[in-house]
Image 1 (tube, rainbow, N blue to C red):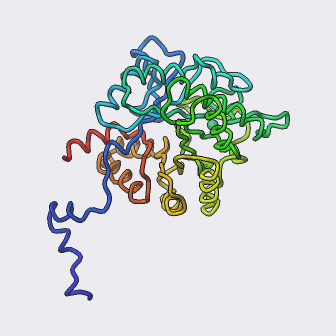
Image 2: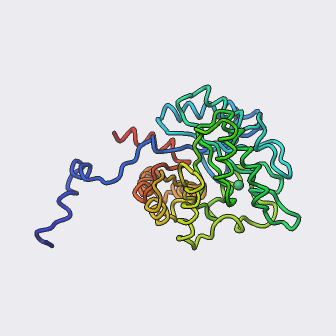
Image 3: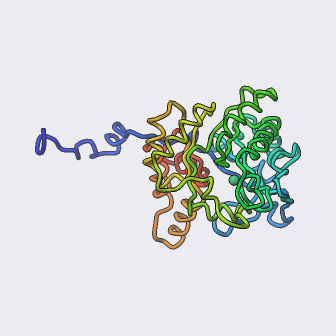
Length: 331
Ligand SMILES: [Zn+2]
């Protein structure tokens, strides 16, 4: 039946009707807040250093990270995702698996302070290597996939030992999920889940993050290991390989320009799917809102809802705290 028997507007007539037929929900328990924990923090600002390209996001001292975790827990967020900013970097990124490294210390402190809040740790080397690449660099400047796997496994085990609830490899080396699974199992952590950054694209939208985590590559770029934004079927293939290697959850990153792939990965796998609403996506909204071009609250909730609609079970977002507050006000 068509118009005039069918009138789509009937079910849009009131808030009650709209609520009754709403297809997609968004709640704080689906959101993960990324935190940048810095080993050396200036004494000023109580251990918080603003990140110019990400208004409202700061590099945190250990104590400030614990404060953020308390706040995240109080707001009902699912988890924090920890990124380390070490004081010292070296050729191999040894700070990544240091038992007393910044992420390991932060994980312990946060789990002690807010035991029910999940601590997810980013497993990669780029924040710890002097060259800023995600793996071992050969003499010719290329990244050695297989030599990197051992270091990633070591890093994941050190995070599990510190109490991480989930480890999340973001390096895009081939075979790293299987390598990490084997190392975790071998070291007594068979129950630690792996959230694989399965389809991580070489994206312009990571720009602000690199300032935050101080992880800009010193030479070249990451296109030899991160994915080409033009490739969708390859994203599904990456996700299926990670499933076969033992991933417990898969991720698509970035999120906003990749809704089609969140949906494709969701349909191709039976695993929970995470979407990473990245720094550049955050910065765009903040800049437009600051200029008066966009309503920040409405835009953020619409973006996050669209990622849920695309198929994301979990969304990692710098907007997480604000979104949780706005959602609480709505109900
Ligand atoms: Zn990396």
